[in-house]
Image (cartoon, rainbow, N blue to C red):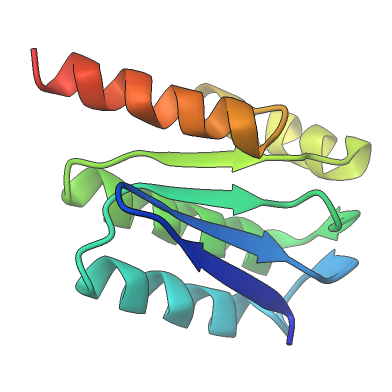
Length: 120
């Protein structure tokens, strides 16, 4: 399996288990994101700790997740970025659009902070 999904009460965590997030994996990741969103999951954490390379297809999957979460008034957080993936996100100027955290624990904190802010 290329990724695992961990569902919690207020969010889901997708852990990528591949070295490369590219055109081979991106379509199945997008499908999983759509299914999670359709099941009512509005907050998603994508843990890229094991991913050292990402291409435009991988970025597209991340942007799909961001759009799905925003459309359902939720939050997407990506975390565990390796240096090459982080550089690509910066070069693409997506670091100003995406919520980025160092790890899953910080991502969870960010989601709960966003939830509190939205309910006030």
